Length: 459
Image 1: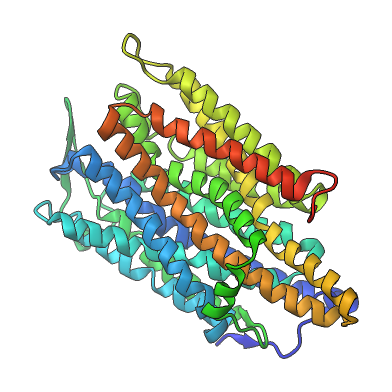
Image 2: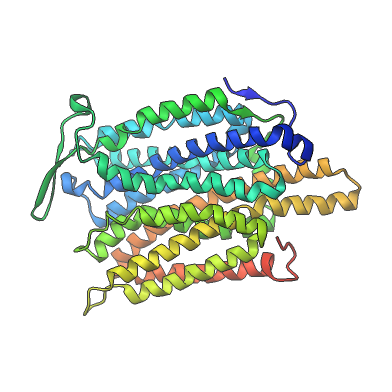
């Protein structure tokens, strides 16, 4: 069973060096493993959907984009629940329980792909169940933030989220390999006939769900046996509602939604997007690279936030995202040409890289902004540092939860915007235009509130 901690003082240097650092790192590792697995399950559906028409499912382009946008939407709603549930059950115990929940979508995917006569509502239901994996960030990252002192929060959360987010890339890399053979023999069911053009082969699409079952059980058991529950942490829906009245909460929401939503939305839509624009090129071979770049660059964004400031790092990230979007416009197919596939890939990978840096830089703003604010209030009221840290830490965690929920909606909006743009105009140009305007607005907000020399909360 998880280990309960009765005293936790990460800002006490002696406590941190003697006892705290070792415990914090153990929980960081377990949380990262669990979060990584949650992201795999959250995004595995996008790799399944791209194969459904080839095995006999009758789906329109709009339906396909809708199916890949549902998991991010449900994931965002699940974060509302997860944001407070971990404080009720205990952070370590919730790590184990929430990991076990992943068995449901893994089973749903394995079942539905073996029934090509399944109604569209059932496909939507399975897509929604994959959204369970999306709730984890709001609990895992908030829990992790309490284990570390202020000076190390950015890097710790960057590692937690970055290697957790790497699950998107792992899903896109491994699922095409797992469905190519009969991994589980007769127990895994009969193969499907996959056909596109002149290419016909057998696939076992159900392996996309089955392959994660043993991993889920192992990680859940490790979290149950070796993680810790911190003392006296309670976040309620009222805490989140209170923080929704703070302007810094919404500013950080905007910055995090733009970067995290870009990572998540582009990752979900990328295989379909490239398939529609460049049908003669094999996008599946490159789908995992962008999310991998974003995930690996997120710890760097957290580190930059600790060293040069989250506002400055966020400004730079959004400038690169805008530059990459301008490059995408140049690469898109037109009426008289087929576009430039390699330039498109390069610009998308630049956007992924910048989004990863922006994720780490903007998310660590929440605990730091509200800790600084609490420190200023404590100085005015004559409070102790411990009281200020406790209040600022709780407010920061609640703001992080709100930001996490809102950011996940970006994963729904981006695929849906691509689908609507194609349906209404026959082109993806309007969708990229909307994203460009958003990136420029976010860059201005980051500069004005957190980066300029006389910013009200420069950090």
